Image (tube, rainbow, N blue to C red; front, side, top):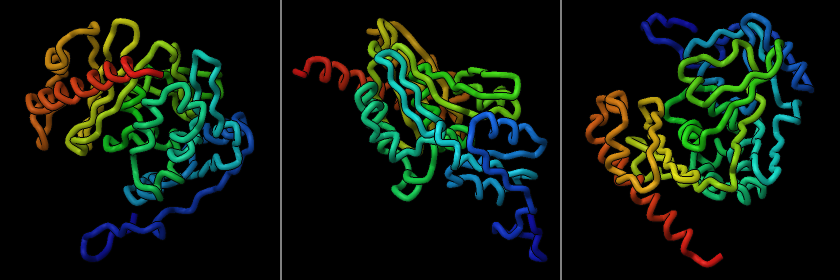
Length: 273
């Protein structure tokens, strides 16, 4: 970064140090290039340049634009797999996503602006680790798994591993995988954003709720179906609160929004198909 005489940091791409550009055409080639010290993966780049302005170091930029396999969506009737290179616009409208998890397609279709939606990728949204980005909230509630490719082989971690930075170093996020989909109902409430968003998944006899906000990492709690929403929300940790909203207030709002989502589920299950 460039420190100006005024003491301010210049927020411009012109201050980014020189780097080597790699443009692999396969996952294996991308992983090999990404294993180099100082390597950074690049997909839609809607967030990457902001990271550069914030001081991200990059010796090798590994462009993923030519790795077509990262843009795949697969559905086998039980497991939904979404490639990390799928952008928000295409992913939320993809017929397989809409058929398998209409609640996810609906929630995904309401995030970000239209300009960003057509560039930002699923993988970029997750790997940026911005609390204001919403995909990790939805995927946490769904019990999704993140499949990474590394030089030592595949590694799978839950979405919350990203906040602890416990994913494999240099690993490439290949896809997001959601299992047992036919037995899941999913809904997403973002009417109180940026203060709070709530994702709810009902699988068998269990309700899983994930609460995120503009300012705090997501937190997930679960309870048997039929548990009072306020009681479930009361299980959220104190860390769910911050200067923008106390834990008590966020628990209250989360309980209200969860109640709305469960009412929607009851209505949808009772509606004729």
